[in-house]
Length: 589
Image 1 (tube, rainbow, N blue to C red):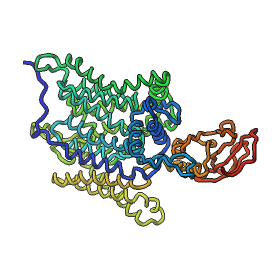
Image 2 (cartoon, helix red, strand yellow):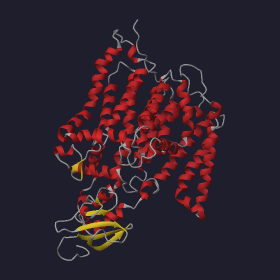
Image 3 (cartoon, rainbow, N blue to C red):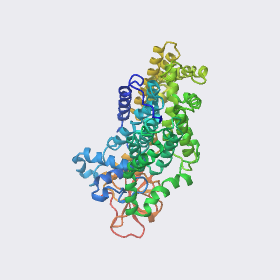
Image 4 (cartoon, rainbow, N blue to C red):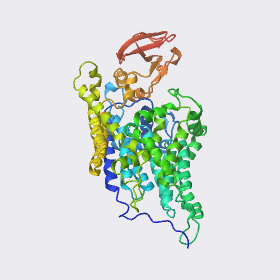
């Protein structure tokens, strides 16, 4: 008698996750929208993404398919997210934004920051329910580990913060989750074809975000499918045909069909821009991060490891126990898949020569898949067993694991003490004043949650889990409502006041003297302000005059200059490079 794939558990064995996951997703959306436009766009990525999206929104015909940056070919990333932001700009940007007052120098004011960040912020929240659904596929019939995994993703600071930025990483993480979820559907339902098509469409999304990232993500997913202990390729259909042959005839074509939109754009891009398409894949893509040590990459593999150690709290203490649990269950999907995804991605990301803090962002999804079941066990000791039996296995290292809530309680008490101290802004305590809301919210949740999770009554432990999630979520919300969540802005001078300075004096073209180029400055100024290291780099108008921004009060270079105005420690000068004749300079136009 031919083997037939087992049917998924019925409603009684597989409790509905729809409503609780929807509530967690709504919480993620609320967190993503809190303070979204309170701070200006940062360098580098946000300023570039915003400008590329704006130019796409103004393009017509074929020009709306190929991204540009200040009129030149944009060859850094595919325009998938930029298209979506551009579409929102077309829909939401009022016509009044195109009407420019005389004070703006004839250049339309840019769209507000919230409008640029809205699409990536919303798309990034999808990883919360998708992560829960992945865990539900790995542990069918077990509701609590899925909810715990989604809650962990909701409360991770890097996931919440990077996702709300006008960058690609939050949306990329959601697409990775969607692709792996579809492949897991194939593992449990090998005779269905829709998951293969959806997996291909998720792959197309990755091709249109960070194209080289599709290769390791898809390879890990297919490897997980091949080594899945349920072995869907070894069973036969009711007609007696091997599923392996069916897969080759149905899965692969449908997977490739889903990849066609992304591949079609890259083919079109190569046809239109030739070598530029190769540069996107290799020169400024995989080749750069694999072979070149970029700025800020001196620590190498320690950069993503540091991000995990700093951003994984309070759940980081559970990660070793999650790895041990997955290893114990390595003969089941609940163990093999998380181990493969966590350490497979680590093997791809850690050796990169170029390391930036957000390069390790994909690691958070398998992190949550490992941590979620352990958190669920702390709440309900019966959640790890097979739902068809009454057995309730103990988590590995249970004696030590039961002490983790005590650590959370101590940390929470310390945070609460720091928050209470910040209420009296005297002496050193004044440094904590901006953080008091974050400290009090997170501290109260961790302290109460840790104490309740140590209680023997299951109902109290459930309240403890809710307190941990609520405290972490409210602490993150307090952070996002403050001006502290985008701390990179404090590393150098603010660009909006300087851009307003150039608009007020109708300065154009402007050069930035012996400073690194700031894409966000160009965004807010409405013109590209390039860096100039000497007089030959100064950009001049037809009359041979140049506007120059320089830190400090000295005139830039060997030029005839007149000081005009200043902001943020920078001075605006109107200059005529040496050898250019004409009338004497006036301070303004």
